Image (cartoon, rainbow, N blue to C red; front, side, top):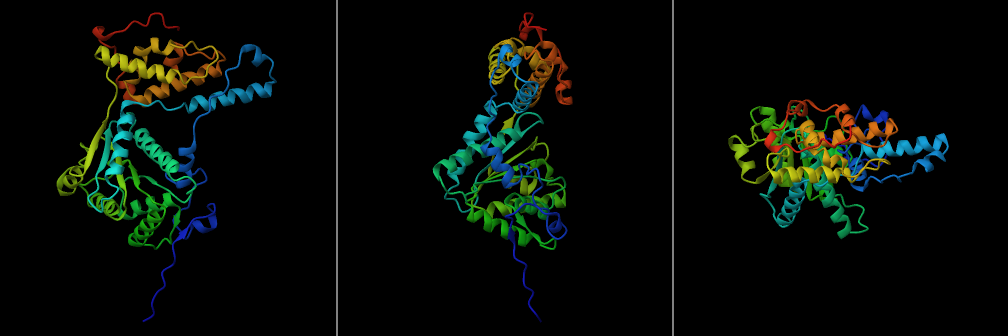
Length: 371
């Protein structure tokens, strides 16, 4: 009997080439999404740079090409406004970084966290901001150690199997495998590379795609648990209403419930004076990031009730409405947001369903808001 030599796992050092795709698990797509180390690295290092506020006279003195370039910078900036810290983001970052410290010397049964809530409540944003804050802190603590990769960020594919999950981990790290590679080979390689790059925080998004009521879902859950035992890292999950999805049901679920704390991601409320003040402060914080020539500060804060009604108190919908109105204001040349422009921005179905009149007892006047 002859022994079969295992084909070595390759760390990917060069760009994806179509010639290799037929024989290996797909390499990094050209756009390098967040679920690759290259895309993640760009996300961590990216801070939107505000364009200069130009006067009407300065714009008139520009060539048509320069004006078009300036407008492109404005559009790019307002499509990607700087993030505003919400209470959920602050809680997730605080609790997550504490868990990392608590787990530093643990060899098993490490504690984790689940971010759970409806769509549009900022779960993925909170998850990725935790990872970004942690990686920035690690880079500051260990300057010049470019080989460090403290974060793994993956999303759970629909109907995930153990091998599919392992491939997602490998894809993030930039590992190529023969298509015949089994889940054990992939897992071993992931754990080896993660140990060498000092991974200590694993972020798993879309955890609701794992259903413990199905055999494949239960096996995928076991694969995550196996990674959690093999990797000296803190695991943080995020998903849509995971309690209702059965993540904590049955023997496997009870084990997760015994090790993971849940941080709820909820929409903002508007029923009390304190809640309305909190919402208005959030709107004002987003408004302060705008770079529109003729926009008057405080305009959006005065329309906080309208924004709440249209967004349903969901941070994702609020961001879409304000960014969309800013883009419309740039395109029509006014560079100021009005109530009419806010109403022109389409919102998601969940926000549409919540677009109901606010009770008179909680109503705030916005009659002076420009239309």
